[in-house]
Image 1 (tube, rainbow, N blue to C red):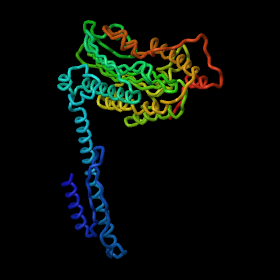
Image 2 (cartoon, helix red, strand yellow):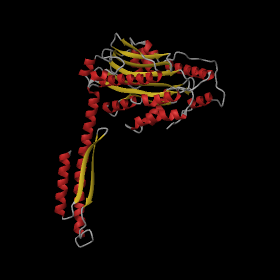
Image 3 (cartoon, one colour):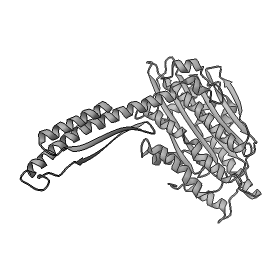
Image 4 (cartoon, rainbow, N blue to C red):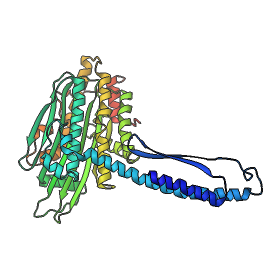
Length: 432
């Protein structure tokens, strides 16, 4: 970059002499900005005033010279900009490679060794399945440690394996100081899709061609549901996952899915705005249409049809994401996974010491009942998990709260906070 700037300065000096004009003093400074970006700044001024500048007969020649010099300057500067962009892209790629580079070192920060052997992950670290497994293990560790910090408790770490292929790591904090039940699961499973699972995928438009009736697959994801004790702290859920299915001709179909959503017991508009703003900002880094589209999808997906209400106040939800390309899709999922702490933990801290009544606790229990209804009747992840041979039922059902309540024909009194909550659930709104 330095040699290029020197060449540019010499070029401009030569152009100025050829044009017989006062030489513009152009000073270039190249420096590195925090965040891995190169920046080149320049300042330009003419060093002295000539007869041309005062309007003498030479002024036309002066103006012509300035135009020529400016044109050359613009052309060469444009070249610098293109080279800068290429250098920036190279540096960003290098930083990402360094970030994903040392597999063994990164694994030391996990709640447990990864499901796949570290040596295999190292050997295949450029493959998407390895990169995704590392991301979900990191997401689990970061979220668990953030929750432990506010709660003071320690997650129980439970490693499990699946005879058909793969396994998982379940982290559970149960009946602790702040949380009735907090679970953060990682699963990495492989094998052959069951007919039921394949049927579910085909119902979503997947054209899957089996060989001898078999569809080899690998599926992995991180999922979490947090059920706090205090009814003023919302329940949160997130899930980020990756699928690969091998077809009869050896080609692979792949896609990402996931999302994050909030289920409060009582509406706090500031909490809702904060939560949705963090998700929107993450989406906007990749595509400004992602947030409005995935927010609507979330409201539709988490709708309890037999109740005519949503499970909570939404967030984002997407599935079958296989565009614009695998690298871009993974980058988007990574941005979403990085929001799970900043979108939720400030809300938890804000309400840690909120007082609540027995009536508020009872309303929380009724809303927990609605949560159970959705998960057991509609949730796609639960249905896929239970339809997968050798799946670990305890980890799938982990999303359910310890306690819930069903009251016959319960309807909150009009004008109460409970009625306000129900109105939002029956008529989802835009928060940002």
